[in-house]
Image 1 (cartoon, one colour):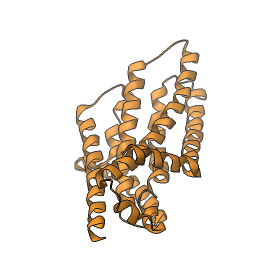
Image 2: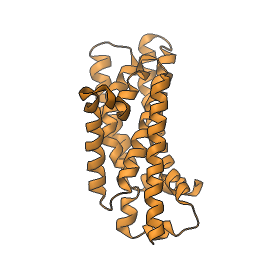
Image 3: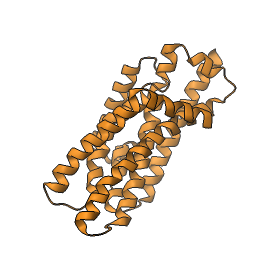
Image 4: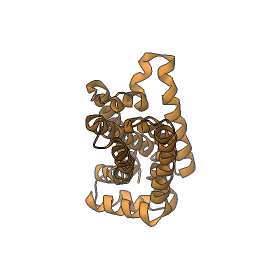
Length: 228
């Protein structure tokens, strides 16, 4: 699995994908930071993540749309499926590689916290910052798992990317229709973390979503392997 992670991480950074994702994410984050921190004089770093969490919905497709669809389109899927590596290790390797890119992005985002601390005259709201970062990682993992599953269903990267974005946006609004839809909205589950809360139910829900879509991806790819 480690070999797959290294290969996928190299793929992200030997192509524009990794740089475009990190660059676009930080560019928009800088805009939000300027508007809500500098313009309004707020020193609450965690508020930035309310807006970047929504931004993640649009940018996560850059990381996930080609995970399996590009392999199928380029004809390398057969080599992947007939290799000695298990389907589980392949799926987890691709998942963790995308997570590495997210973690790199989150490390860069700490510069905004450093700026807030400078203006505040010291370290501020450390518990809230930690809960926000943990929540954002969990939200990112849920999005990656979902996007990866969509990518496993088609050979067209554009279709995979657009479908991922549309379905994640739909999940934003479903809780407005009925509270019973709260459980299927990753963004809804994230809401408490920037308030310094480690919500048990929401954490379990996000972990369940992550595990479910990873498992579904494994099932899809195992089925394709059995048909080879």
